[in-house]
Image 1 (cartoon, rainbow, N blue to C red):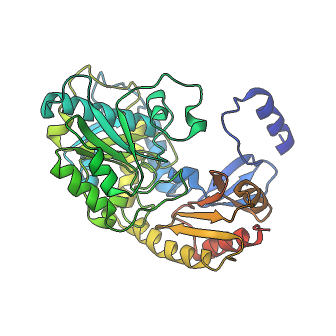
Image 2: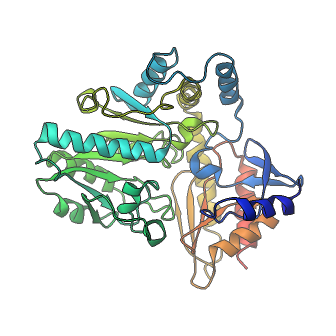
Image 3: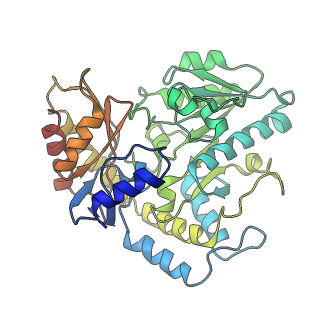
Length: 397
């Protein structure tokens, strides 16, 4: 089937909830993909960080294939032999006592919200149904009705109400505003350490440490959404590691499944996780044998430190290259690890730039009209990084 045929069928039969670039991928290996017509592209998006280890990493594929030959699903009605080792491995990686696995990042966020509320009522003593959670403007935590209810993106919210109450907004990076928003009903602060969908917005140094200090002082949980920023993307295992911060709850997803299967989880101290009791939360597929086997393989890759180091070293090269782009085309470059938001000057559309990059053999994606988002797999080479910069520069018009 040709590119034209595929795009025709997509237009005719697929829901129009995405606006993808006009590329139909048929194969992928490492940092490269091939379309249905045989053209190769460097993947500079990596599935929004789900493909941190590249396409079809041999360690992850081997783990999946081996588990496919044994058992893929039991539900949590029974134990299986991958579950306890996965929980132990993820506990060790995050430094937490307890793990609750789910499937998607949005499910991890919903799980953390439920934990925070139940902890607030049962431990902190907040009056029933009055718990509040502080979130940041321009956040992106998923697309369930609860989550889009506290989004500030009109495209995410429009015509999906009524929304779940109990959330307060503060500007991202404003520690004073965050502390002022806390009162006796506040049970948690939910933040992305780096705002990905907003265009790779990195808070000022000291902000995350300040959030940790303020939440601890006010007996409020710090929920760190590391679904995009975690697992090597920022040059550290977690973005919180950049300031030696340990939140109360880690929210993980995307790269935890290695681009093979959807895997998410929250991890927390045992006394927090124990607010969940049998029947209070669950998932038929959460923590399934296939997911746990792949997740364990992901953790084994991260425990070598190789990918975190690549994030730091190649990220520095990407940052240096992007800062050579012409100032009359690029208003701002925001980088952290191997993750960048290139803010264009008014009048340039990021979508147009990304479409031109296709012709140069590089796939990137726009966000919020003015930002080109770059998050290549951590397996890219120095030459690959240079190619991304070169093609982006040639596509600025």
